[in-house]
Length: 315
Image 1 (tube, helix red, strand yellow):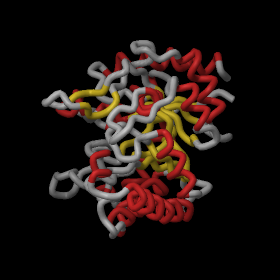
Image 2 (cartoon, rainbow, N blue to C red):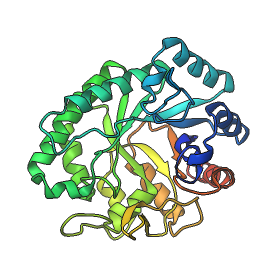
Image 3 (cartoon, rainbow, N blue to C red):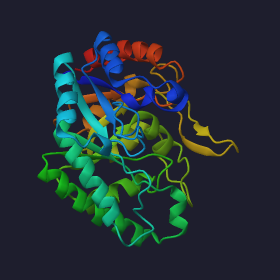
Image 4 (cartoon, one colour):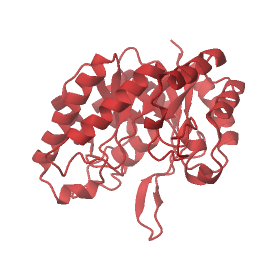
C-alpha cells in the first residue's frame, strides 16, 4: 500500500529559518500546494504560532492550553485535507538518565500526550534528551534501567490516550549504538512502542558510529542495520546523508547532516526495500526531514517528487 507523505514543520522555524519562521497556516497552505498528505508537528515554538498572553512562546505548546484553540488547529487541518503524521514531544530541558527522579520528565510527557490527543495526532516522537557523554556519569546498566522504566510509564500514558510512541535514535543522544536500540526496545516491551528510523541517522549511527562513546559499533551498510531492526520500526523519516555530522563552532560533531533526497551518498533503491521489510505492519507515513537545509521549500518540492517516485516503485 502506498505511504502517506508528510514533512516536518520544524525546518520552517529552526536553524537557517529561525529568524524568519513561517506561520503555521502558511506552512499548511504551501504543503497542500505541493500535494503532501500532511505535516509532522514539532511541539516547539513558534509553530503553530501560539503565544502566551504575555507574548512569550518559550513553553509552547503549553501556551495552547485552551481546548478551543486546539480545536481550531485540528479543524484547520481537516479543512485543508491534511493530517498530522506525528508530533515531536517537547521534552527539552528534562533529565532522563542522570537522575533517579523521572517525575518531571513523565509530567512533561503527560502534557505532550494530552496535546497530541486533542489535536488528533496518532504518534509521539521521543528521544533520550541527554547527550552520549552522559554515559561517563552513569553506569550503562543504571542508565538503561532508568530509560526503560520511564518509557514504560510513558507508553502506558500514551496508551490511555490511544497513542503510539516512537523513539528517534540520533548521534547527538545517549544510547546511539545498534545493540542499544535492541536492548532498550526489548526492555520497554510495550506494544505501542517502536523505533523511528531516519535514513540519515541510520547512516551515521548504524554505519559510521558517529558520537559513540567507547568502542564503535557499526554495520557494513544500512541493509544489515535494518535487518537487525526488523519488526521494531513504527515510524520513518527520509533524508539523505553525506556521511558527515554538522559541526559546532569548535568543529566538534553535533548531529547527522540531513540533505534533500538525491543530494547525498544514500542509495535509496537498495535501502527502501530493506526499510519496508524492517517496518512493522501498519506503518502509514514517510516523513521528509530537512533539518537545517537552507532553502527548505525548494528542497521540499524536489524531495516530494523523488519520494513519490519511490512510493510508486515500492508500493
